[in-house]
Length: 416
Image 1 (cartoon, one colour):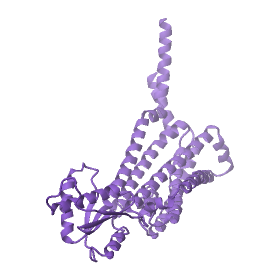
Image 2: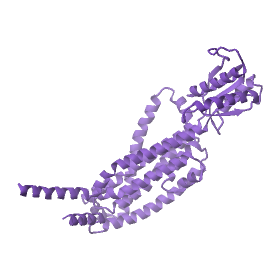
Image 3: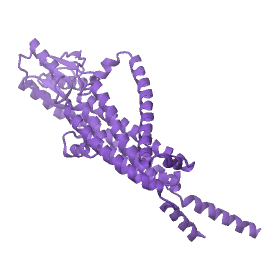
Image 4: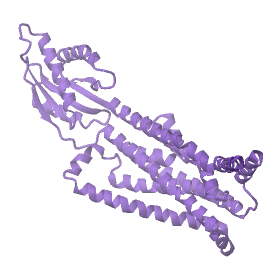
């Protein structure tokens, strides 16, 4: 019995060391950290975009100085009662050009929804005795707040009104937007950024899986004997890029069919209309995906060429994944603060540039920055492919155990 226990202990120690002293176990150990980082980066980016969109929203008072001052006084009393994070948008006073009771003021109120500087949710205009509300899509609760302010301002100058009776009768009118909102464009930019990051990481990671399979069954050695390894590197990169485009075309087509089947989808998408138009925006999205995929795919292939097994490839791919998540976080921060120094850095840094620029296309109508960015990214794609092909050749032609295998052998030797 003692002998059986001793032999079982040897087997247990062997299996424990063989499992723990591998790169795959490190991946398993860090799996919760991966999930936490993905959730944290994605949630932080979405929150930054949402906050920037909320900051751009405004409730506008189009009234004379006396009436506007009474509305602002009511706002100063009521707004602090709202919990942090759910307060209505900021109140902004505008002076009407025309008489407040005339039709010209209504035209001014409608024109405010086309203001590119702010995202107008609702407009209060008209006289104190007959106030009117123009309400943007999805802004009913903000319109209710403006109506409460108008009622409070009217009650302040009248006495003897029973508590349950309304002082004024407010006319409400919905307004259908014909142009995109700032918040909608920024949300579209973040969505495009996130999809680009997800597709790039998912599809570019395929390159190392294919390479590991071919190194395991010795196909890579046959290819190396037939053609230069630089041609193998470039051919694999282009071939798998074609697979990625087919994947995107398939699911993109399904998404388009589903969108077309939704009634009034065009009216719903007005608020998300990108600044450069949907056609150029989609074309730029494909180009930026190509730049991001070729950059990351070249790095994955070059790194995969240094490994001798799938476990080693997983270990080598780990820092690349962390780096790419950092690029996503950088681009998200840039999308939330357009025009800042951080945004300029994200747009210039090669590995974050595709993500930052696709978000920029949603809110900036200028096309020339995209032409310059694509030329800049093409330069870095060429440099990365050239250096990656050279490193790939050295990795495939090298002989002897890798650094990970030598480390595992050393750990097993110490354990024995």
